[in-house]
Length: 263
Image (cartoon, rainbow, N blue to C red; front, side, top):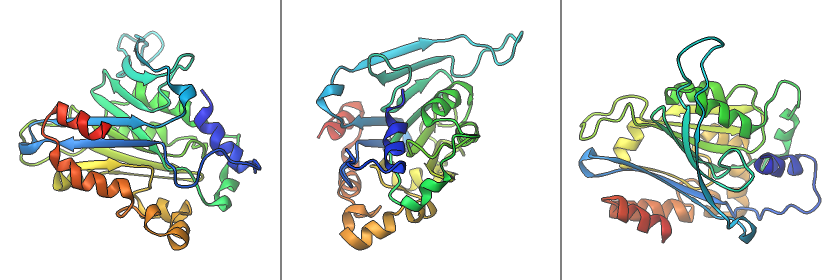
């Protein structure tokens, strides 16, 4: 369960030979509003090593109660997600929940060594467990963010997207708040916002291992990487940013969404 958190702990504890190639990334995600707002599709790709090839789709039905002696079940009592043998969460991460939420992330990491000072085992909970708890308890994107951001460990630092299908109205001209919530975490800092308006303006939201929020982007060391290495580390001119911007217009149904994410 600790793989993602351990990657950051290795960096924080000055592992001499980091395994992760700078700027390599590992995931891509797309939230696509179909023409006429008739439907909302969500997709996630994971790029990883051959040792991770054995993939599973898991379904959990866990009728836990919201309180001791209570009768109401937790909102996310049923979960379907991509995963691996021996793990109790997704790790990709990509979840479909009985609460009506779909949650997914791409890793943004931390490239600013000065921020590792915010790691403290006291009063923090590792990311993989906060992820599980938020998925089970939240009824909306804002609730998910409220639960998840507590006890920030500063490890497995990701950009999380929460799509609330309860708030989505097929064919609706004006969006309801809360359709898309985006949260980004780094050591000592969590930023989240309702980006539904942006989703409807652009017709899509793409995620590709680069922070969106300026505060997170700058604090995590990405601005310095842009100065050193150029557009590869920018939010708008990153290669996958440009690919998504160009090719998301080709998506008009589920099959075309799959083609884009596999291309």
